[in-house]
Image (cartoon, rainbow, N blue to C red):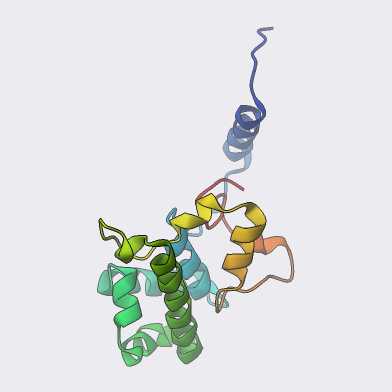
Length: 164
């Protein structure tokens, strides 16, 4: 038997790898970008998988940048979200969510407010401790705290783009 030395992070990564190989994670179409994942989660509640996946693809095709979604006329988003139901509520939540992200970007001088302008981002969540990042995310309109542990997000990676 060959002994190897793994640090805690390496050990957890290896366990995760073995569990993934054995049981496979469900592919819900989740994405790695924290803001994209948050919007994806917003659209998925409570909607059938094929419907929210189709709406998310249409949203990203029509509006490649989140800043464009924020500036979009509400009527256009309402029509886009209509097949999922609760379309006015989803539109309001998405616009409010993006406005909060915009304010956080402006405050931190990142995204569209950085010297090298980019799209709106939640990348700053990487710098927060877990409790603060979770509090920020669960305070977002349409996201909110879950009644169970599903607030850890429904994919192998949480909305900050890190492993659970």
